[in-house]
Image (cartoon, rainbow, N blue to C red):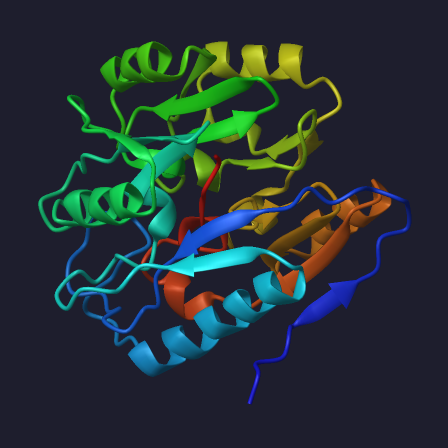
Amino acid sequence: MEPELATIAPAPSDRVAVPKTVLMCRPDFFTVSYRINPWMHPEHPTSTQTAVAQWETLHAAYLRLGYDVHLVDPIDGLNDMVYAANGGFTLDGTAYGARFTYEQRAPEGPAYMAWLEQAGFEVHVPQHVNEGEGDFLVSGDVILAGHGFRTTLESHDELRSIFGREVVSLRLVDPSFYHLDTAIAILDDENVAYLPKAFDDASRIELERRYPDAVLVSDEDAAVLGLNSFGDGRSMVIASRALGFERDLRARGYETIGVDLSELLLGGGGVKCCTLELRR
């Protein structure tokens, strides 16, 4: 039986959806057996079955939105491979591979690079530590790049040299929001939502300058990884418990689709973490 979406709120305006192609990884081996972020507590039980069922709801949401969804095979022993966003970064048919901070996730880098190469991307093997689209987000013509916990500033220079785009470095300072995609959501080519306290002063000033009309989320919505969302310019798939964020999005004309990924949140991930955009 196809999983049901948690909530679907119709868009009150005529926004236009941009076709999306994404890569996902079914959480067949998901569990929390180590601690590499504040969300993870290996002493607490997790359910792989529940994680799979919740992931299938997200997968179904993307199919209903008309996304072209590709799957990479999960690997036994790689608990976090479900968080596909960390597996690399793609733009203009080119892929920049991931080089993970923690040894537990290190094998994911080559696995994702192999898939991307087979899919026809020109793959660049990283020289510096980075965790892919977890810390690299495309906003219009620029790449927003996080650093501070999982991705180094040196990798931002690699991005510039590979893609020839402006790269805006943003420093994360709250360990609960250790990847950029937990602290910023891309709404469309011009608009973002973010959590101000997740950034240092210089980064907040830069965000305020670039996005004066941004959606600023509450601590409550951020605490359920509400910003860890994904959309196509018309619809945003978000955490179902991020109710304030949902109201703000609907007020600005976005359709919202709420999904419950509470089991995957135990590993520190949400909607966007499970989603690597493939840009050709």
